[in-house]
Length: 198
Image (cartoon, rainbow, N blue to C red):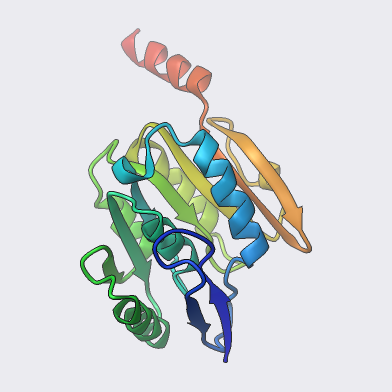
């Protein structure tokens, strides 16, 4: 069994197990370090006021990294039974049960159930070769707070995956992994609102 480490915050250097499961590929340490450096500059709220959700949690590397940095709330969603159980054990091992809500279920269904404009940071890192990223983005827009961000990870260039109402704020590539931060395009949102008021 391989492991990944938490980069910063309360649980810095703590290791998380990675089960040998099809499609389970935790975001590499180097990528997470880059992403959280971006977030330190781009999040409009301090970590202590940020509400985060990881819709395809897997090892929990992304959501637990955010929780380690003291987010106001952190929800992890995982549908696979053994992976969910491993994640539950990781949370218990960190003593993080009070800091994290862990849900076994469909990430997109959980996102649909969230109140509109209630989430500041969404992690979208679904299995490659599935339509889940596009489906989640279609639901995500109204769920983000003003200034809210989405982390995206795919084996395809992000520009090919995003509809016009999204803009990429930061992006990079590590090996076969394309990743970045995106937000709703304010100009597109204004056009939608103006059209709706006619």
